[in-house]
Structures are given as C-alpha cells and as structure tokens.
Image (cartoon, rainbow, N blue to C red):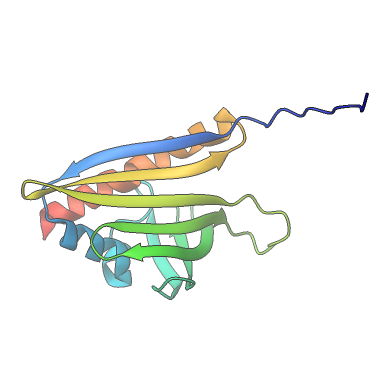
Amino acid sequence: MAARTETAEAPKYALEISRLFDAPPGLVFKLWTTPEHLVRWWGPKNFSSTTDIFEFREGGRYRHLIHGPDGLTYAMSGIFREIVEAKRIVFTFAWDDGDFQGRFETMVAVTMAAEGGRTRLTFRQEPFAVIETRDSHIEGWSECLDRLGVYLASL
C-alpha cells in the first residue's frame, strides 16, 4: 500500500466592511479612481496622503503614502487587477518598505451597487493567514471609509 500524506491548508481570513453612501455609484467610483479626490480621504483619521504612482488600468501600478500625525510616512503599493466602471475595483495591496522579496500581499475588492439613489460599498481584503493580522486592518480601513463618507457629503 502506498504511503499517503495529507496536509491541512492553513485557515485564511478575510476582512469585509460595508457602508451605504448617500451618492450614486458613479461618483463613489470617481473618488476611488481619481488621485486628486483619493488624497482627500485615503488613510486613517488624522492622516494625510499623497499618491506617488497611479496607473489606473488593469495591470497598472499604484503607490500611496499616508502621513501620520507623528511625522511618520507609510507606503502601500500594488497592481490593479480588475476594473468595472462604477461597479468594481480589484487590486493587490502590500505595505511597501522598499523590499519586494517576501512581502505580505493581499487582494482587495471594492464593489459598488446602487440602492435607490445611494451606493452600497463593500470592501473585502484577503487572505490573511492569522486573525490578528486581519483584525489589525479593521480600524484603519474603517476610518478610511468614514473619511470617504465625510468627503462625499462635502461635495
């Protein structure tokens, strides 16, 4: 009888956040896809942001920087994988410390669906190997989406 080896796949965790915005999907999509709007809300509260690279097309790269109130700057980068006008944006995401070898990369999917004259935005980031890493992203992304809502209301 042949030996059989079974390996259990490590659990993978996803982060999902949903928000209902008082704006049509086209406008919400525009604020995700236009650097001059993106820098107005990207990042946690009390952070500012700049965009270093933004090639908004499938296969295009991006690199965003968030600047903390403590004076520290954090970079993130990735590649746009899927773009469906006013409906869906999928991109890779990794903290960018300049070392691209072995960096932890996730996939982010942002979907927008009309609900009356409003937009249901669903943000999903995965996979996270451990629940603690997933949970460490909840506050930052939640504050980012809160800031998007405030910015939308100001337009």
